[in-house]
Amino acid sequence: MKINHHIWRPGDNEYLWFACDKHNRIAMFNNYMTGEIPLCIMTDKDFKEAIDSLYEYIFEESNRFSYYRKHGQTVLKYYSFDSFRHRSHSRFDKTPETPYTLEEVLASITKYNQDNFKNICDENLPSRKGLFLFDAIRGYQPNCDYPVGYEGETQAGDYFSFLMPTDYATLDDIPEVFHSVIAKSDELDFTQTDLIKKQDIHRYFTAFAL
Image 1 (cartoon, one colour):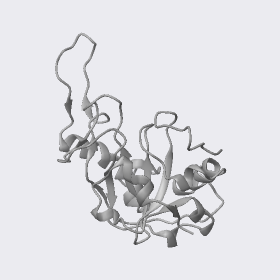
Image 2 (cartoon, helix red, strand yellow):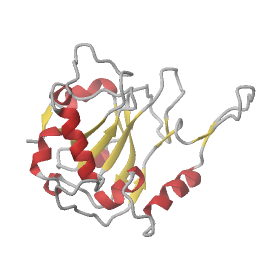
Image 3 (cartoon, rainbow, N blue to C red):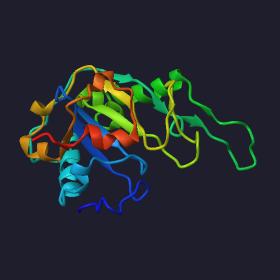
């Protein structure tokens, strides 16, 4: 599947994609139908199938390769208001919706990082697989979503740092066959990156990590 980047616009579909920073540390990006996707990925005719295979490898859903494990922690950086908010019970409820407290979000994430939880999921990707997670800000109305805790200006489609590892996965942990669908930035350091503006995606990620 190849995305025609001349006609594709955010909102068409939801996609996951992977990238590495200037230190070859790996991150997973979820565009939530609003975030831009690097042109090098969009113009690859086989990107969807290749990224699906990489996803299955990361989430240990395929037996094609031997898996790796990290032994760090999952660190919460910022979180989505749209994902973690106290919602109105009906359209007649005029009570303002409020974000979950930090303690509520941490409790939600911590349960997936317990030893008795065996599956790989987004919430334990940092601790078990060493990946950074960046989420795009959702929605098409102002302030319907924003990264809670971030103090700068944001807009839908910006990617914010959601979860961070302490034991990092790098390209050396990933089979070389997948390097051709991992976008590479020669400027970013994911440990120091709070937000990536949507208009900067194509500037930061111009090629694959070949």
